Amino acid sequence: MIQSIPVQYTLRPASPEAHLFEVTVTVLQPAKNGQVFFLPAWIPGSYMIREFSKHIVSLSAEASGKTVALRQLDKNRWQAEPAKGALTLRYQVYAYDLSVRGAYLDGERGFFNGTSVFLAVDGYQDEPCSVDIHAPDSKSYADWKVATSLPAADIKKKSGFGRYQASNYDELIDHPVELGNFKKVSFKACGVPHEFVVSGRFQGDLKRLAEDTRKICEYQIKLFGEPAPFDRYVFMLFVGKDIYGGLEHRASTALVANRDDLPAPGAAEISDGYLKLLGLISHEYFHSWNVKRMKPAAFTPYDLNREGHTRLLWAFEGITSYYDDLALVRSGLIDEKRYLGLLAETITGVQRGAGRLKQTLEQSSFEAWTKYYRQDENSPNSIVSYYTKGSLAALALDLLIRRDSKGKQSLDDVMRALWAKWLADGKGLEEDEWEKIAIETTGLKLKPFFDLALRSTQDLPLAELLASQGVELKFEAAQGASDRGGVVDAFAGKPAPLTLGVKTAGDAAGVKLAQVLDGGAAQAAGLSGGDVVVAVDKLRAVDLDKQIARYAAGDKIKLHAFRRDELMSFDVTLQPAAEDTCRLKLLPDGGKWIASR
Image 1: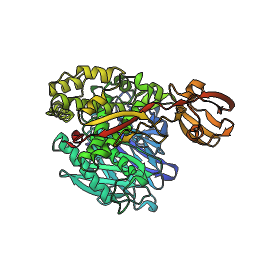
Image 2 (image 1 turned 60 degrees about the vertical axis):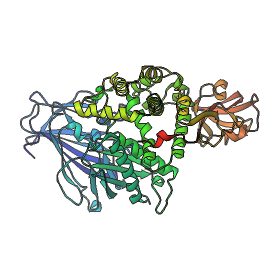
Image 3 (image 1 turned 120 degrees about the horizontal axis):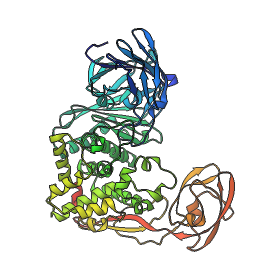
Image 4 (image 1 turned 90 degrees about the vertical axis):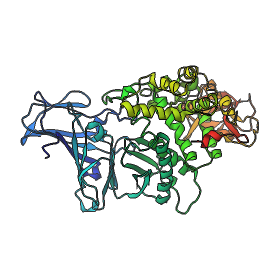
């Protein structure tokens, strides 16, 4: 026990086979009237109450070698009886969440966020703390190592096991930890050491991954201005099957992706899967500035026991989503045409959701806790994403500033002004402060734009603004389920195929309607999300698009579907697909803003 550190943790992978971490927390001078402990109910960056305390399997307390009684106060808080001397809580945490938000442990690897495993000591959140990370006891884990951006105090150089420290609880929980026999590559970006740790089973070119990531990092550091806001940075990537996601932290990020998205050894091109992974890397790294440091005042400090509502998530997630792909062009990884293809897909995704006509961007941000992170089969009809529409609002704002300043200013200038403000005072942004800084920085009359983009459900003037930069936009009918828009040399104007207005998923019994969209033929006929279509005009349902392709608009067909365990029939009048698929055409000398710095 270290007498100078008031709160001390230990963590041991006690039983990888049972997915159990054993954790202790010792407070040297517990509160005289009974010390309170709590585990966060959510993790910053993922705006949903997740109740991490449900994974605590056992919990006990002792002081001076004697058992101390614990009383649970509510879902995530406990109070120990008054005790003399240092008080230690010992508990086990079930860890089998493969996402980037929780904790995971099995015989292959371990991973945890502090919000899942470290009980906070109430009243001591601002005090220094330490954590001793132990290796599993069995010799079969002798090759396990530790990867984390948490500052080291006394660790084994080769494995990384040992003592780490944090200046307070907020810092402790903002450095996730990877355990296992992972692969690692290192590089420097603008002189700052970076590590890329990859776990899981894979065949991939990690040297190329490191070099491509370095280019992204250097562009972003230079965008905001050197030096970088950290002395060292760690990427932690787990690769598997059918997984994708990331979560930002102050000097690291946790990522999960498909193993086939890694660059293949010897491959020169950037596959679609690798491009998606690079976009994820770029997104989470950009958060090092935009939300980990610059953030809403509602998050300073975080209240980890309840929701923290803000209308500014569009700025912190949407703008980050705009820059993540833009950084791939500006760092030289892809060209303008491929970037426009990604942009067209984003525009298509927003245009196809009727929710954009019902929920504003500010509402989407504020209601993230109850709507965006708790989506159901009707979500496309009722909400808009502050990620995707937020990125389009950022695009529109960037193009507007460039146009009205005659190319002298851009959104880059606003981001640098926001960063300078944070460096000067370290304070969070009030709800109206982002807009004020944008107006002050550019000297432009931007309020009408903000009213339209953030506080109305009108569509953004993207066609007009893109045209000012030499890019033509047109909406056409999708030519199949996989058509999400893209870049064209000429607008085709092909006839609209027929559609039921649904999104489907596989099902052993037939074709499941994952979502039934507003205004579509299926909704008009009474079909609902979750229904499983088993027959189309008395023929087995296999591929709905192909099975209706030979009919004509206005024709009526009969669908049979199971709703729960009831077989129902529906008379459907077929409709042509709506013109909601974005095509972008790059005009001569157009799109120069894409690669400009």
